[in-house]
Length: 92
Image 1: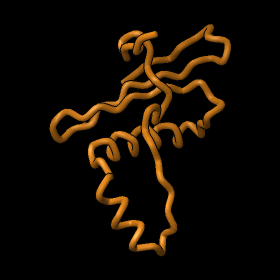
Image 2: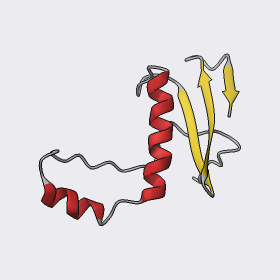
Image 3: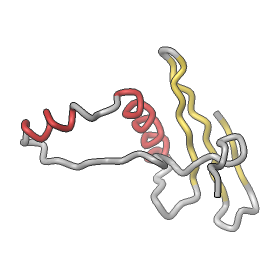
Image 4: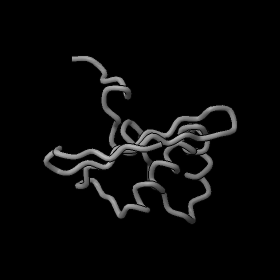
């Protein structure tokens, strides 16, 4: 019934981001999508997805991550969990 604070539980990687796929050779679509692209969200998403990729994670793996921008720096808080929740590894 309410949002869960990241201090209580980190979200899944890329949680809340909306992705739109387009053809690589479609400059008209690229131009239209550039108008709605949010640069800071794109940077955070790229960081979170790189973390997930390095762990060979997927939508089926219990891996959480939240990237936050602070001026010119990016900070990633991360968790890897056992599927049954019996163990959690956290780092940033």
